[in-house]
Image (cartoon, rainbow, N blue to C red; front, side, top):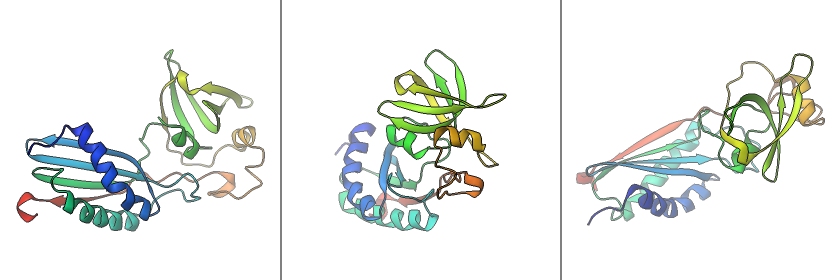
Length: 207
């Protein structure tokens, strides 16, 4: 039996793995499949639900999910012909912001945004309203608020920060943010985890 192409196989594996991921209280961000002859590499990227107040996924959770996902795939070996490697990981800091939920998760984070006209803007991410995101662009005297349609964004990625967000930027995007509960010190949200991964290998002769 010949395995389907990587994109088709990824869709099939998503259907198999989704109940296991949901059972762990997580959501599937992406399923990626790469093939080399009869060997396959399956990468399962999981994320927290939007409603979760947490800022990252513990590596122990990833490890338990990796074992559960591998056990779930074993009865479906007909989908993957040959040996395969399963990697379960959380999104790293380098994940592009491509979906509305990515922008919502990046609330009050600093992002590097490349617009369709080639302009590059570093700005703090605010609320997403429909298909437009509010951002605070740093200025010499004060930050400036801009509303950018997602259709005008070619690429966007969260940046690593080593100090709290400037209060003026945070207040511009959400005046109540500094007075409410926050994830980090001085009203700044802590950085999302930079991605933890656990890998499981399934050799054909052991299946």
